[in-house]
Length: 285
Image (cartoon, rainbow, N blue to C red; front, side, top):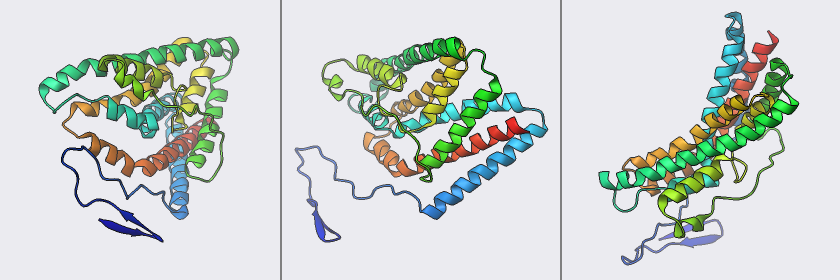
C-alpha cells in the first residue's frame, strides 16, 4: 500500500507475514479543535458555570454544592488521567493472559485487586503527607479562602487546557517501568503500577485537575480529609483498568483512547472552567 503524504510517500506492505505478529502503523491521529470551537467551549463553560452557581446560591446550597462539585471534578479528573502515557501503558500491560475466557479473567482478577491496593497505598502516603503539612501550616485558613483560591486556579488551568493561557505545569517526565513485566508476576506488577500511579507525582499526569486536588488536600488542614481527597482522584484513575474484565481487545482500547486524546483535553478544560466559575459565584453571592 502506498499513501502520498505531501512531498513524501508512505509505503506499507500489503500483506503481513503470518509468522510475525504486527499491527499496521496508524496514519489517522486525533486533532485539536479549531480556535473558534475552543473559544466557544470556553465561553459556554464559564456561562453555564456562572448560571449554575447563581441558581444553587439562591437555594442556599453553597457549602454542599461546593463539596459535590469538587468530588465530581476529582473523580472525573482521575478518569481523564487515563490519557496520560502511563494510562495507555496500564491498560495495555495489565491484561488477562492468553485468549479471553472466564478462566483467564479469574486468573487476572488478583492483578486488578493488587492494582487497586497500590492506588490505595498511594492515596494513604500522598494524602497523609499533604494532610500533615496542611495541618501544620493551614489549619486556621478560612474555608472561603481555600475554595476561592482553588476556583481561580481551576479557571487558569481550564484556559490553559483550551490553549488560551500558559500556566506552569511541573511534572516528572517519567513512566511506569515497562521492564517490570519481565521480572515480576502479574499481580506484583499491578501493585507496583498502582502505587507509582497512586502517588501521582512519580509519573507524568496529563490533567491539571491533579493540581486542584493537591491544593484542596493541602489546604484542608486535615489528614483524613486529605487522604479522602487523593483517594477520590485515585478511584477515577484505577477504574478504567476494569475494562480488561470485558472481551475487548487491547488494540480496540488503545485506538479508542487515541481517537479521544484531544477531546479529553477539551473536556478537562470545560470541567475546570465551569466548576471554577460556579464555585466563584457561590462564594460571591
